[in-house]
Figure 1 (cartoon, protein in one colour):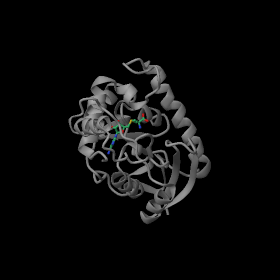
Figure 2 (figure 1 turned 180 degrees about the horizontal axis):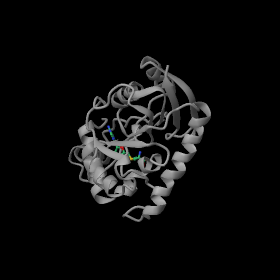
Figure 3 (figure 1 turned 120 degrees about the vertical axis):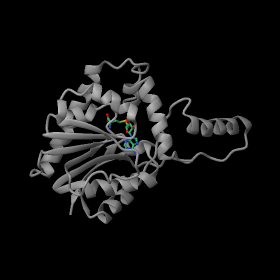
Figure 4 (figure 1 turned 180 degrees about the vertical axis):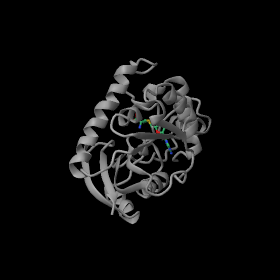
Length: 246
Ligand SMILES: C[S@@+](CC[C@H](N)C(=O)[O-])C[C@H]1O[C@@H](n2cnc3c(N)ncnc32)[C@H](O)[C@@H]1O
């Protein structure tokens, strides 16, 4: 059973209190607060530089006024986007993540962090952002939510702007029904934990590429480029989509 948004929020708040950097990048050996802050934020700089180079080639006239980082966590990507855009807004469902993000902000009021626990991005008017950016976030949401957020990305993207997002496309197999007692016990424990967030966890979800492209088109967008080279053939097969308003 996929987590509801309020459950995602509870789990991420709990993660943010215990081990916020590892909750964002679950690299082996970096758990238990072992990420070095400079190294962690440097990964964001590299990722954003590489992504924007790809965007620039395909959408060279994109303006650099205002970018949105959806699912900003502790601000790894937002901070990096601030080197390229006049203003960056980071939104996150976890207020605790945003406490960390504000603490690590190095760009003053050029970066603002906003809490959004809604299923939509109604707080932003149509055409607000030159770039809407989101990585390693939609994959943690049930498809009913990611479908809606993707459509919202297109709505809040300015004409001439870009929407750049990543989402797992592989088949995440639903848990099989089983009456084997240890499996039953494990499933009961999972359900209890999903509600109580005793041990924070993040679910993996995915949407097939064809469906994502259809959502973009239905929202008045146009797919510019898709990179499907990540984890091909594995459960974590992932696509990066670059879209614009048609
Ligand atoms: C794995 S972290 C990635 C953070 C950031 N994108 C990065 O790459 O550094 C995922 C973040 O998405 C946030 N998130 C999950 N669901 C969200 C939603 N519905 N709206 C906004 N943020 C959400 C989580 O709280 C968490 O901070």
